[in-house]
Image (cartoon, rainbow, N blue to C red; front, side):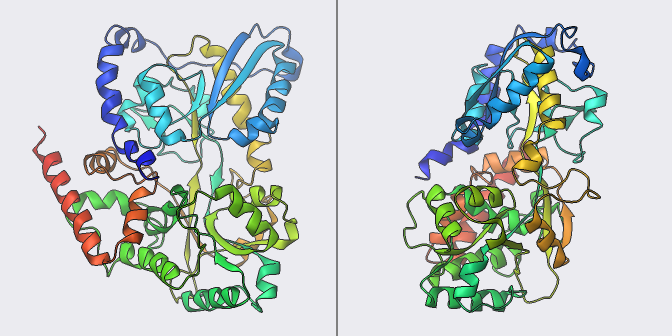
Length: 438
């Protein structure tokens, strides 16, 4: 299963090599282009817009293609641009597949930016956005290079414990756990009641990111925790945040507080089980809440609270961008692609409908569960972009921070210290090779 993800660490180098061959004749002409810009059209300018043709949007949200949500957005877009058509293609392993697609120029017209693409390579694959569009972005350190912005975030998220209130009631849990000891006690009560305490989704692999780099990057209140690892030879230690975060996950496994069928990819099944109260909790982003309700849960039965990763009374929580969306350099209809990008981000109900947080912190969240989350007064830590130096080291060590497979290996290891020693050895070797490059 993890073999499917291991190639995530290599594609940046593969892309670079392929691009030298594929783009040798094209880069010089691209560099002379300025940012693409599309004047905003009002509702009365449909016929005069002049935009026409067909574009393709690549996405990880296959579910929204299948249920017609994206088609509805495209139909509304056509009311403004009657001769414009938007088609959609879903990639099930987006983080892996999109880098391969970039290397073959088969990228559609509008797509999500790869999370592990160095910023210096953005200009090779994406069109710079107009100043007007760029000014709308909340997360100013992401998707930029050389003073130009190449993508807009599709939503804002945080991470915490999504839980079923009826499952808690059945297990006799009278209040939301606010410390780690209380969290373990709640897990014990859920297990005793015949309810899976927490669905870790070990077999799906990618959800394990929450127990590793996602958690350590906010639990200290330092959003540059991962970036700072480039200055260390031995960042993985039992006594630091890595040991704390992965130690909690290993405790959950050891005590049987997670699903029994660990190696099955049961992501879809887990949502239904949490919706029915057969499972009690997830450690995931707020974006999962809408999906759990779509799986059959009533909104009033689903709650959300900050993850109590220690026994202090106040905890940090992440404030992260979701995927960034941009326009492909390979698009043959960049004007229409840019218009669709702006429309999707600023005018569709995507962010509100699918459980994301308001782009502006002063706005009232549509998600009632987020209001509950905020009632516990977490300290929100706004994310910063991973530096090119960190991405380069991650690729050199062949550690896929973005897919979670190395965390699966660490959680399964008999000896956590030995596992950390192996990670540190790889990291130190990668640092030495990085420093030796002129």
